[in-house]
Length: 294
Image (cartoon, rainbow, N blue to C red):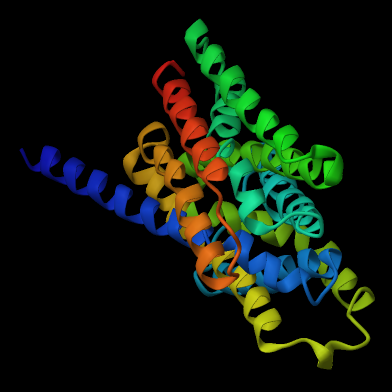
């Protein structure tokens, strides 16, 4: 009876931590938009990784965490490529061409990308219906892009698609690795691995006219550096470890709704019925892929 109680408590804690993580991630695109409006996307990517990396290194040293094993290094490199470098850089570049509300539609594919990488890395054989939902969801996003005039911003759409693919890989690898390495340790070591590259680049790409950056620009940078790049992952990976990857991972379905709301409120961007409709359609498809993933 005691074991069952603890198991239920851990499940509830997992959902709570996962929800907090998704809520923090939901502000990533609007905050990134604020930052890239006044600073280059390359510097924004480097700065957020460098700041979060220094914070992660400090936490690892304070808690005297042991170094990852050799077999854990490659998965950590994939997490770093996907979540520390790939998604932040490609999404920041995309936001030069797209509104944050438009980019958030692509985040509706993030759970799908995570599930696909989870399937391939986990060696599972999903039901054929899984792939049906996968194709329908992808067609919804591509169809929306064309309906909005993809020729007006093809670069932005392609960059966001690539960003989602890399992020899905990072999420899947991190979720798998968190079972042995620990939740917050995964993102911390992934950030530390990128630190030797990011710190020198930080000074190389440091803006000449940094004094012209407004409070909004610095707020966006601070948010994505602290919450999107580090603190959000602590709650996210902890939630996955406590409540299970398959179940808590479904909370990602809420991210597009939160993100669209934040974009409309803080950036005063228009959220059309088409955006909402496509987002809902993609979410339904991702829910179907989750059901038939195993």
